[in-house]
Length: 141
Length: 141
DNA sequence: GGGGAAATAAAGCAATGGCTACGCCTAGCA
DNA sequence: TGCTAGGCGTAGCCATTGCTTTATTTCCCC
Ligand SMILES: [Mn+2]
Ligand SMILES: [Mn+2]
Ligand SMILES: [Mn+2]
Ligand SMILES: [Mn+2]
Image (cartoon, rainbow over all chains, first blue to last red; front, side, top):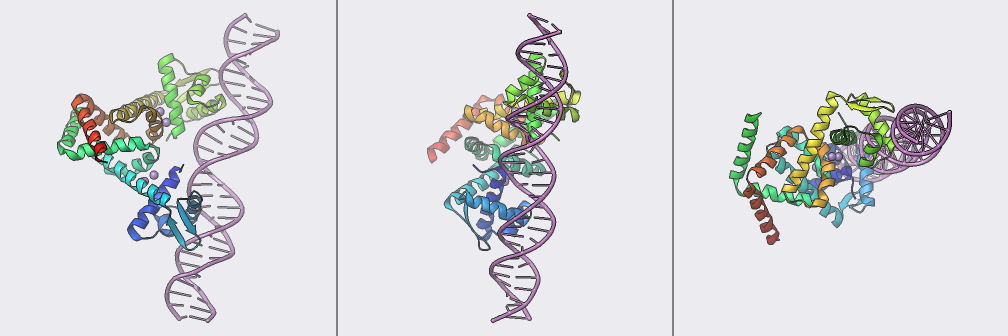
């Protein structure tokens, strides 16, 4: 099982490879706001757990396992951002909240949230009605 | 700011006082599945942070701050359980997921989830429609 | 007053993951 | 082709968190 931090690294690495074709230590470090030496250490851990193949000074390649997991992690993060956006959470809170909760939800829960997001996507009227509920609750207090 | 573990202790303490009128070290320990010495230590920390007033061998009393926070924590936990239940997460996953995410959501997010739960509560037809979306998605794959 | 249960203190441990300092590699330029 | 700057890696260290073990203290009730 990957720790929260391992997931954050893997997520970032997958995204970098997806967008730029490669993931350098310095880019990972910058993205996660840690020092490069921390990245090297974590990469070695991810290698040991077979998420990627690492060659010193040569870069890294995600294994099938790492690719699959990375993809899921990136999608999960995006899904949760969408979810919080839909239910009306303030922009400035979303990223931090997602960074926190993403590591603590079962895949069962993720699937259910996916369904929920799709539910609101299919009929924008539903979002309007949700907003109405919100307004009523605010008026009440 | 309280750490996740501090929140878990405070939540449990509030609940015990609410249900039995008092919170003994051994009950707290049992509920959280830790040793009594761990409880004593954490109680001292909570005392230092003014969530409660602690007298050795005499028990503890929540301060207004502690009461207020404890109440919010218990309600937050319950809300999140309701939320996951509504969207169709399996019983067996709910407790663990809630235990994890509850510490990582802003109060803004909590409020929005409250609204969402109320949205489904007001019209059970909405839950049915959500279930329909789910079935369609399942049929698709 | 004594026995036993409950609570506390002290010490230490393990996991995690960050940082600093310094040394090593290599791409790319001179 | 050799140098070197900057990227990368290693080693050692530290902070945090929260738990355990063990030993001692206190309380309560007989
Ligand atoms: Mn994260
Ligand atoms: Mn993320
Ligand atoms: Mn919890
Ligand atoms: Mn809880």
